[in-house]
Length: 388
Image (spheres, rainbow, N blue to C red):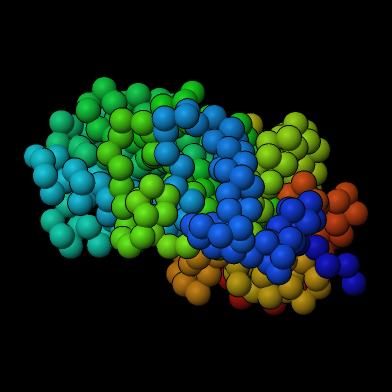
């Protein structure tokens, strides 16, 4: 039985080149980079190169800040709680505008800020799963401190009009943040081109290890802190730097950007092959126009097949997939994206997310197509709700 991993939006394998780059920093060059002796000093040039790679990877300017942290979830919390502490508490601006389809690491801290009196507007999305620009314009006022919208949705892969949203925010004197966790390595990410004030990402989404990420802060935007303590990261994020993981993420973002053409051609071709096969099956539909999605992602709805049952069946036959965000995988409620776009209650429980990487092969896709087709046939045969 072939093992096929199609859950790359949840996490990716570490690129072997990234693993190799990290190897010396576990047992040979393991000093604290803040130490004054040779064990610490020998790390500094390597860490500076890793940080330079992050700057180049998103086209950040020399005067901008990139704060290395544990993940995009930490970065998102830093932005939201930092905006509350640095802006909302000290001004007449008491509002945040975001979307109804953000990652749980955005939704949960927004709910927390609401308990502190912040007014948060959650904008609905259209049938493509994307927020409408006119709706944003209507929601923003001179009391808006921040607009936050993801670059690419983690479940549908749909790309949001980030540059236009940033322009709307700035026209009203608001700051703009984007969660780019699902964008880096799949599409070009250029912070200066889109005008982001804050951008967050996780390394493990583009073949770096888990437990490392970063927050970009544009020069001139308020500097935000979540963790206080030492003077690491210019005093903006306390805690000893995880040198191996930071070096790995620097290597990974360079490799990811170098592979963008492959991602946009070969990965898209394999994804389209899988998507075309799914759409040939009766009562299967896919959310969002494929030309407005990142090249690796499919969110399908399969009438008559409960998502959890499909995942169980696929897993038994060697194919790893998901019903949506891994960060909400213990929640058996209806898929929030399908609910947001107006799917009926039954259909909202039938989500299947399939996400490829540059390591996915044609042989794996062929096996996945056959396995998914067989699973749908088996599960529909025993369904009491599907009209055969």
